Length: 230
Image: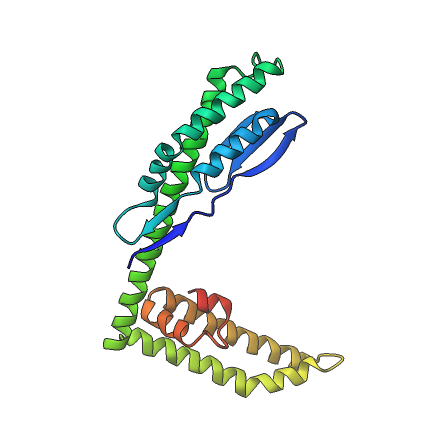
């Protein structure tokens, strides 16, 4: 399936000082600092880069398409870089930020943009791998559930029976203003068995992805967080 999507990419800008801006790239260890005086030129150029439309599903990756944005915005790059240098010169700031440093700023913006595309490719690949693993687990579960699924189900049933048969008694103890030694033993015994069963279920789930899939399909109702997470 082929679809088009407009990139919603942003650089997070934080005012680092009265006359400088620090641009931080959230997904990677990228930082870009430049005079606030030329921030408008940098912003306009980056808006051009991230303003493209991209094809998803025909084998093209985001990284390659984002590289294409550099060519698409080449005229904008020349104009914005020249404008930044002119403004710095007019304000007698070219000594602090000479043309070669301005060129580095704009080149770093391009590198950040391409790396963002690569990051999206990696994320997409990870989702595909996870989706394939889920599909394989589902097929295996539907075809012939292994013995471990039955064992996990049996442990869950034991725990449910334990909570149903002992839970009311323990709740009644909790409602008392004071606990006797027998009450304390009852609570300790109940909690120990509940922890034992829950721990056994968690360990089995780690070795039995088909059982994890079953719990996921059920919506993990009544399942503790550690069990649902495996």
